[in-house]
Every structure is written in structure tokens, then in C-alpha cells.
Length: 367
Image (cartoon, rainbow, N blue to C red; front, side, top):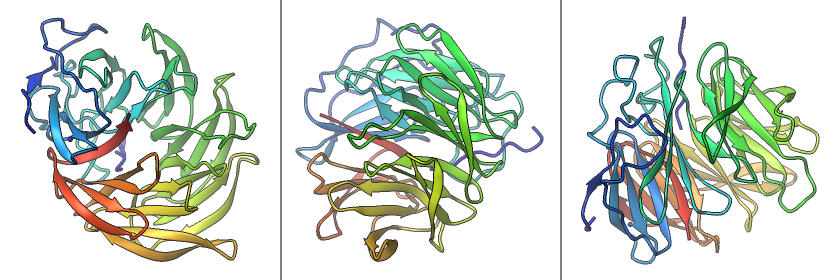
């Protein structure tokens, strides 16, 4: 789940194309609609500029939703309306919408190469029809777009030295708030309460500041700035009341307690993390090995510490990880292999690889 650093500055039904040049926040009515009435995994293909839709029953790609021509170069100010290099994807709390951050640049190969004036985009896609219902440009390139816990807002970062988080009304895409955070923020995530009466926070990983900004969802104000490791990319929520921050350059995981808003543990990895996923039924941490790695490392909680206890061979440049509702299956996107690995969780074995588009990164399940 790579972040950009700006220095100085389930295949077989018809393919259809959504306009990559929409400025208005509505669907192009000329585009045909799909019928996705089955549990599915939606995989963001950055270079493929598309979504692969995997049927969870057959483990096959059943649809491909295109956002235009394959990604290349950068969107920049010379092509402000292009949809290129989509990155991460989230589902709304009610399951009726998918949000996608579009930084406009390839974030898979490292952190250099950003250009002043680059813009980002927020897309909203209907998971049942494949229609793009929102295509909103942002002033500065972003990393992701995530719904607020009640689904009424969309939050996205602005990856600049003067870091900001933008909060949009999810119904109208009117800008509601601009919140100053640390330098070059990447992922914005929402805390999970795990069924407990904890406050609702947004966590923002500030890559160049080596901090995480904690924002009250209700007041839209920063309540605390927490020092973490070197080059944090995302604070990934666990249902155990913790947030797990992957520090890419530091090759560590900072564990933040949501109740106290403090780092309570640092996990030494010895490799560059791509993503951290907490398994709620097994009390395990699954950490993908990014770059030249082709595996997911599994940590178990032993004697009040996270210990490496296994690994799963996946594909080259393993990244996002998600679990099915029953917790028995994991899906892992492999950027370098253009595949999604299907993993048996109890045995920690790869069952199969599913070919998707080029440079897959974000993934979300919808039932």
C-alpha cells in the first residue's frame, strides 16, 4: 500500500467503459449497467485502470469495470479530468456504495516522482450495477477515500507538505471541512470500536512527519498527534480496540490503543510492510511483505507480545489483505503478479491465484 512522497513540493461478461473525463458528480447515463447480485470481491487494478469483480462462490473474475484507457504517466494539471491510477477502495456502512481514491500516479514503485500541481479524484461506484455515480476532483493528489461511520461523509487526504484532510458530504459532494494534519498524509481510516463504547476517530498517517493525526469524527478537530515509526502509510483498524500502523521505511508496526490514543507496542518486522490485517476470530495479525516479497507473515499474541508464528506464500509484491465474514478465507492482492491469492486461513495455505488486472492494490468484499 505504497504512499507517494512529494519533495519540494470474480472474465466473461461484456466489458464496458465509464467515462474518465467526467467533471460532474453523476453517472454518464449512456453507459450500460451490470447485474452484480452475488457476493463479490472488488479489486482495484491501478495500471489496468479498472475494477475486477470476483464471484466469491466460483472464485472467478465475472466482470471487469473499466474507468477508461490503461493508466500511464500521471494525470497532473494538463489532464485534470482523467481517471488514472486508482488505488484504494472502501465500502459504505450500508453496503450500497464503493469509494475509490485516485491519486493519478503509480504508487507501487516507491515514493519519489511526485509533481507539483497534481490533482486527485474520488470515485463512488454502485456495487450492484458497476455505475460510477461520483467523479470528484480534489485540489491535491490523494491516497484513498473512506466513508464516515454513519456513511454521510467521505474523507480523503491531500498528499502535500501542508497536509490536509478534506471532508465531503457523501450525498452532494459539497466540501464540509478542511482539516490541517501532518506533512504528506497518506491513508485516512476510521477506528473500529469492536462493539465497545469508544469514541469515533479518523486516523491519518502522516508519512513525512512520522506521526498519526487523530481527528474526532464529530467535531472535525485534531485531538492528538501521535509519534510512530519512519514513514507511516496507514493506521489499519482492529476490532480489538487497536490501530495497527505500518511504517514502511522503519519496517515496523506501531500499535495504537484507541482508548488511550497512545502507542502501546512496536513490532519489529525486518521487511517492508504493505498492509496489516487483524483477524478478529483468531487474534492474529497478517502483514504482507511489499516490494520483492511474495508472502504474508502471520503473528500470534503470545505472552502479551506479537510473535511471528507462520507465513503464507502468495505472489510478488503482496499488498492488501481482507477476510471473509466467516474468517475462513483471506484474499491478498499481489501488485507484481497481477493476481489475487485465495488463502485457507486455518491451514495458512494458498488455495489458488486469480488473474486480475495490472498492479492490483485495494480490495473490498461486498455481500
